[in-house]
Length: 138
Image (cartoon, rainbow, N blue to C red; front, side):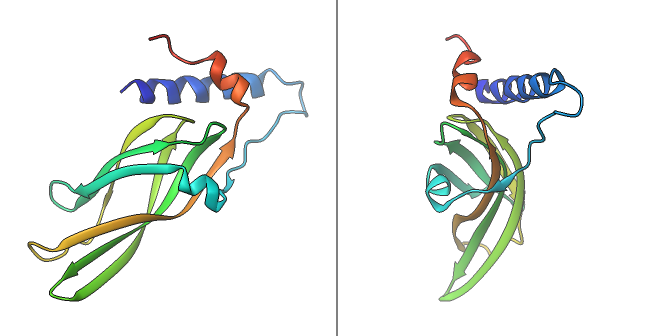
């Protein structure tokens, strides 16, 4: 839960900094595609939840990237038949934070096996010094 509050604080600080910039010189935060190395630093566990929700927890191991969007694949397999699908997940994951996630999927048959992975991710880079100065106290 602490990661959720940290994400909200980080967004507020970034907005405050950009609002305090001189008029006409405001920085615009534009999400960009993450590199394969940055995507490999996103880890987590997921499974089929209640109903058709597939989700779990994700950890952003990037010290300088705020993640805003993920494209994930969920592969359903039963009796040798494979059904892969791609889903878009809008999410806010601060650097070095863990958050829950979930997407509605087309569920497979009962007793099907599921696997998943991240195909693409988008986000924006942030200054690690700024992040360290706003770490919540433990």
